[in-house]
Image (cartoon, rainbow, N blue to C red; front, side):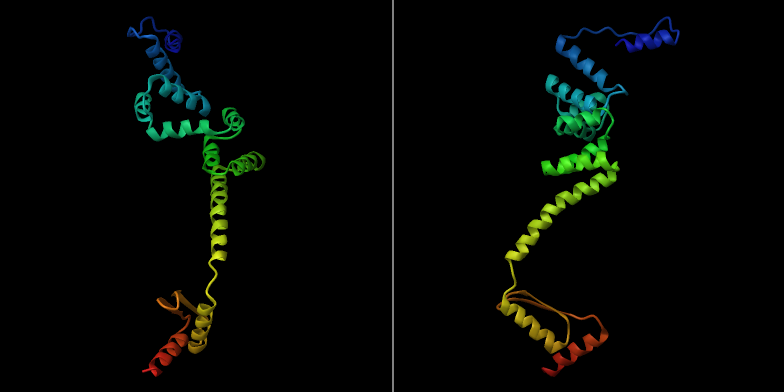
Amino acid sequence: GERRPRAAKMAGLQKVPVQLRKFDEVKKLEVALIENIQRADLNPIEEANAYYNLIQLSELSQDEVAKRVGKNRSTVANAIRLLRLPEDIQHSLSNGQISAGHARAILMVKNDSDMRILYGKIIGSSLSVREAESLADQYNNGGRAASKKKEQKRTKKDPDVENFEQDIKNIFGVKNVELKGDMEKGALVINYSSHADFDRIYNVLNSLK
């Protein structure tokens, strides 16, 4: 590449070691891409596109590309994932408006509309990466919590079970009793919160002998 001769000239070197190799056109492009990836001034999207183009051109796996450029496989995989972002968010990442950490937090969100909302909050509220990740978790967990709440409404407790639990509470003088199962098979859990509760439960059970 031209950077090495320029650097040698700036350093005042008269001679430098050189290797001459013959490559076909595809190999030339591959070498150029590898050289390009190893530049320090690439933005995250440029780096991601370089990895992607190298894989498409050479048919190398992500692991093989990682070895060629001296990176971890996870680094290559995480970089390529950034290309799944909408173009406007990629542009924000390219110009430094958001960081790669912010971009990965956005990719954590499973819902497209929530992804857009999170992006807007990162920009509007100057969220840190940690704050963005926490908010992404909230968006994802919020959906699961809503589904769980609906499921709980659908599985309302049997009135006979509720009456039975209330009778046990009255007999033992405790506030929390749970029948796990149904009226035919299961487990009865009697919770106590003090030594007095324990003694009372013991005395009631002992009186049944």
